[in-house]
Length: 517
Image 1 (cartoon, rainbow, N blue to C red):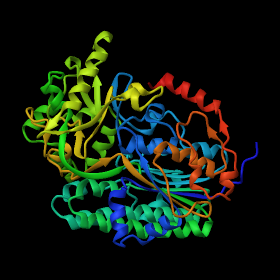
Image 2: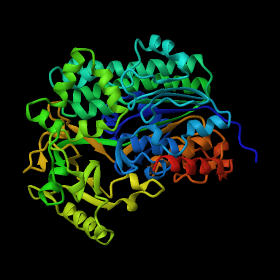
Image 3: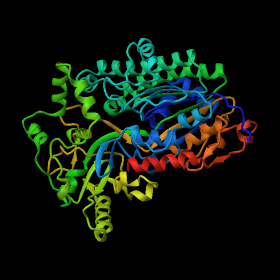
Image 4: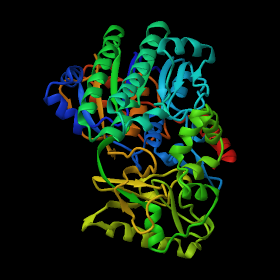
């Protein structure tokens, strides 16, 4: 089978970017580069995964499959009957960078939020959000000193100081966000200009961070979108110079946060959960919150060492998320350790569905001052399918606008709806929260102009990029090629959309399943 000669493609990722803000800023003339792209290309709303969380959503975008197929169902997974912090070691499907690499396509991937440790690809990769402090973040390793020099110190995430600063000094906190974005942009620009590539992907997480913490200070949000607009201009120049098509994407959208739903407190109140005491619980009672402990460790330069070791062990799940009122997992019927509800394995099979249905009905009847909290509750198999569905909560749900779910257990025992936004006891409160509706924009010599598309899914990006690179689409992918973004006379429309069975990948997945379930 002959495929079209590959053409360069750029993916410009903006974590949490939302039309709710972009349209307002565009109307007021604050974002000239975005305006140029939209007028000369296409736009669409892109629906996230359920839950609409960074790790499963970006992974679905980079693999073309839903979370139960790739295995990263949330930041915390249930694997081999244990709860673990998700890393790319638990991802069971190849990313497009790996697929393209086997076909001779060179990729540069900067600040991949879903990957740690960095993967051997045909090109260059720097990792992002899931990287333990102080750990290696780059492949190939010999480029690390070069990247450090270019960035003036590469950041995979905002430093701890940000979360301690944001509630005290907005200007100082914003300067950290600005610096983070600039470091990512500099590295992407430098690598694109000095190394060979066919696919360039640069992902900005700074937008997600600032929208979580400073949604109530919209002047800072606007200032940061203006910064991203200016950064995009440089990448648009690269696209024009290289005659590359560019996709601008977000993993989910955003909105205001007014109230927090403490899932575990609610489950305890309705009789489905019991609590216990442990060392972490006792530490919390004497005022040693995680934020205070982190400050102390940082003072003695031990923070990075301790956090790195925690992230590489199972202890972090309890240490970080059930520190105040630990859950008695053995004697609880249901509990949350992710953005959903797990039914205890000890529940008899004949009562499992009845228990799940009862909890779902109670969720959908849950009210806060006569206002419904839950928009809709789902059985996990209603929103995902695949070999690793057992890693996900048995019940998933979408909350109504303004509400944030938290599996942190520090809500007062009698209050399951609270104003301690985000549930970060002893730390900064959140004022913004994820919404399912993200963005998609596309621009280039193959892209239609002035086109507003129907809603698309995050799964559609991977097959679309493979198609743009002239490669066959693996048959297991859930997404579809977005052919309606292309001009009628583009070879990308004429090109046959060939599906490849990819038996090698299927065998690889079966071997993985023997090791990690």
